[in-house]
Image 1 (cartoon, each protein chain N blue to C red):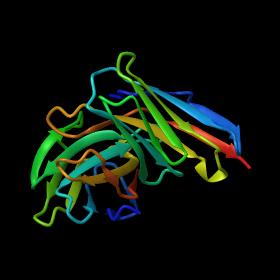
Image 2 (tube, helix red, strand yellow; image 1 turned 90 degrees about the vertical axis):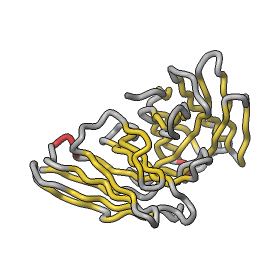
Image 3 (cartoon, chains in turn brown, orange; image 1 turned 30 degrees about the vertical axis):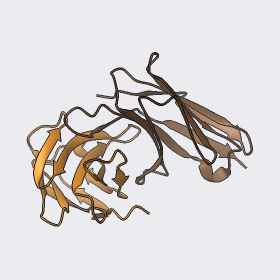
Amino acid sequence: SQQGEEDPQALSIQEGENATMNCSYKTSINNLQWYRQNSGRGLVHLILIRSNEREKHSGRLRVTLDTSKKSSSLLITASRAADTASYFCATDARKANSKLTFGKGITLSVRP
Amino acid sequence: ETGVTQSPTHLIKTRGQQVTLRCSSQSGHNTVSWYQQALGQGPQFIFQYYREEENGRGNFPPRFSGLQFPNYSSELNVNALELDDSALYLCASSLPSGDEQFFGPGTRLTVL
């Protein structure tokens, strides 16, 4: 079953613009992670935010977490054509193991 | 690249056949997780192996089985293949205390 739901399902922006992607989840978590996937290939880890954190930055990425609303957002600033990919949020409830529960993903297209 | 390798890259099988997929984890990682990603969906957790023992399983039938070897590499076996088993199969390695999972490029399985 999918825990996270990303919003929007698809996003098309112009190079240089910012892209904001949202994720909602259902159960309590240990951490939430964002991954990128290019053309059905392997997943690339972007950023992790723990349940006791509210905001993290990594380069052009900014992620926020609101555990009271069970939601997260990923902001990519100054987007580039190379950012075109599918983006997934994944939650780690860390009960017995570190399995990740993914959403269905967001398709981001950055037009040159 | 993450250092996680998977083989083969692509595979075509027919219904009822059996398949074995292989994964070599990143150096020093003793935990391997397997995920199934159907087209247009997010990855779904199949199971995780830690020190050669299964350490958690998702909602997959027993015809999905796995192994982990002393060098921490892993195999995913699927018996009695069905058309719905067509998907990208991803393995990810991690440290047991680590939160980040490092994904391989995946094996694309097509069942005809």
